[in-house]
Image (cartoon, rainbow, N blue to C red; front, side, top):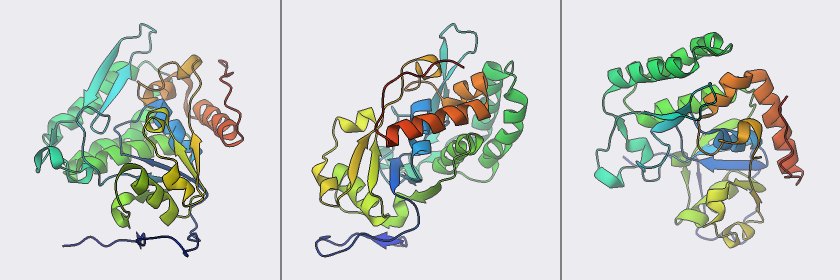
Length: 269
């Protein structure tokens, strides 16, 4: 059955006015990740809304089904937390088509590894309680994307993000890569598209200029909790400083990025 699409991009946007939609001006588009890295969480927090890129090809070497955890002792040791994933259509399986291969075992592994790494944090007890819906999701769904998106929602809620979440599978965009991202941003009324350092290496800004959308490079600082922001799950920073302090830090970064001040002058508090 053909999926219902909320919005559809015309073959040509010439003569079309920008959609007047209530999601906000600043858009981030990113795959659902398992307990995403701090850099990813910061990009989503900076956006007014997040389009979950759930209908692109699943990539085993990405963060769609795994997260890197780091110990709190400062040793720098890390460990992968992975969800066993079944791809019904092989390598062509989309993210939303990926299935949980062993839900019971994955549920135990998530609960155990997070506790092993963070039970000594002053913030663990409260986080453990709020973690329960993510753990329980393994009993109610076999879709990987349901669990990973829920884990990201949890972290966004922890730091007080007030934004909205949409899904690319509910939108009909043209082409691939840059053209598709530009269409998704245009369809939802964005005036600014946040692009991480990885995306800036391949993004064709011309696709966005056609829609009069600014491409805003997103980069995190390099000191304090940010030193491993592109590698380690944001759970690590949350367990180091707590949700209130991390929320304030993300809000400060958001202001600096949107105001065009990207100097990495953050200091420990």
